[in-house]
Length: 261
Length: 256
Image 1: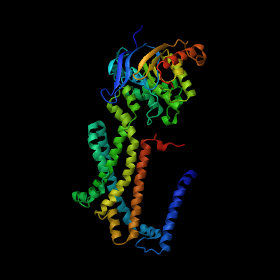
Image 2: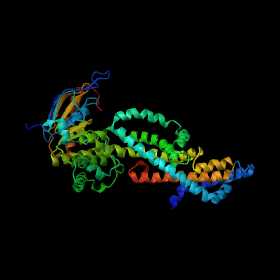
Image 3: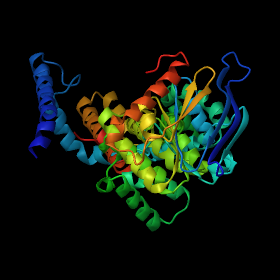
Image 4: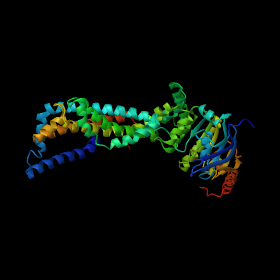
């Protein structure tokens, strides 16, 4: 196996350690994610999947264990801008027009104004929002805002995308469209994607692997390889194998004995 | 044009109706002119006294604007300092909140003694202190009440603290800042005029009002109060315009 993009080794995460409200969010997590993988983390609320994503992004530090990203400690990878994060809310800065939101990371990374403007336009075209460069975020629908957030994440060409329920706040139809769009972008760019979701069909449709987690404390109960043909299309959702895999993930989640939304 | 008219016509109509009721009230109940003058009398006095009340108004407006500028600039600097050093914030904020609830105008006799009764600085100081606390408190809130996900986003870009301040915290604070500045415009005009009631230059609007009132020249006092109102409204409108220029994205400017 090639060197991992993400390597998580014996990670424990305890919040408020020693306090009365001590919570063990993650316990004994080991996970390897290869370059080009699309890995979904799925599990009921409180299983620590968002926490795990934040550990990979060095937005949190593990209580014990190590997180390696792109061959280096997660903190180094963050400083090297090896990954981009996409949140459930688009998290666009409301005082910036769409184009300047996409430029934000490039600005911080010190790219010169003309180059970053050109790059941002290219990214907006990629998510088919070229015509909305000069709009403010509030003038866009939730789905469009999330596409801007994806364009922003891709703008500085990070090797890894960390997505925290990015389509969770969207209606079903918008959601399926954006899933297709994300598939297209993933095929085209060859990024490694770690994707947190509540939705079984979403996880199965998008992923190369689905990691099923259980709550309190968060553990990995099963990793399921998704061997559906690629590229995934609208027909994928009608493939008998798709339904088999849905059932497999659902069974794994049932094993954790928590009601699944 | 018609929509503009439609928007302001009700208010203008109510204003005129109010004046008519006032006028009728004084006439019908035969109220003594020196207690409550009729609007028509005030209007006449206003026109006659224009050469006096307008310069007086400008004199006082200079104190109000000067004090406002001093207070607002210091408040913003203080807020930025507290955003930088959280220890400063935790130390200062309780005092700021307490000071914000005290009647600062009561300082006026003291600052009169400090700077001299006719020195505009004595009024500006009172105004500056009045404006300082609400602006500082609001600005600190705006700098600190930032969405967690926006901070996480900046952290994921390995942004330096100064960039987080400049690109997130300061823009985030602008709506807070401007709402305090708008309150500050009214406070500053009130502060300047009331401070002058405790004594000041003979050119000052507050001095004029208190002297005319002492002589039962109420129409003159009302004429000067009109000038004070116009100043307050005008100052507010200027800050409102600045707000619109500074944050064209803001909720308050969204139409439809």
